[in-house]
Length: 220
Image (cartoon, rainbow, N blue to C red; front, top):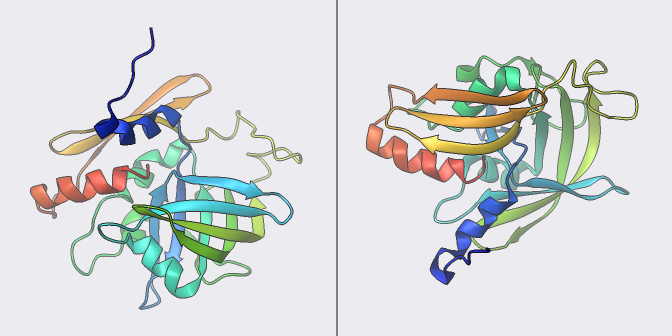
């Protein structure tokens, strides 16, 4: 028996598109420092030219990554694996004033070839992207961007770009829960499920943290 979703809760229908495959997006802050955040609403939209589309929250408040992308027109899509899933989730958490997410993550910076933002050394592949257009599509902005340079770990992928599962467990996300002091995220890997519980940063106010983390979770 099929169950209908009430019209006032139709926004929940997008959850039926799970699982998702989150990426780490790196951008440049206005002061020249590096920024990183995880997002799942990204997909290829053209092969020739190679082009991707990524949706970032724009209402009621723009995500930091969107502001950076609007300003410089560049970003990098970094492909993480399960070994850095905890760090990836931490990158969705808010920071206190003056704290930098990239520095907090401990990720290794890799200079890029064609764009200003840096890549993440712990990720298995990197797509350097330049914005073609940004469209208002609702509570998100849809970013269309060309892939102008790419590289990958040749142990994680075959020459045909197929995933080598003996070397690379891609992050395939199926569920998450907001707990009082942490988030619990469930991923799939080739041998079963993989569960990660990530505590919230203690420096942040709990009530503010809950609101902001719920907002970030829309894209993870």
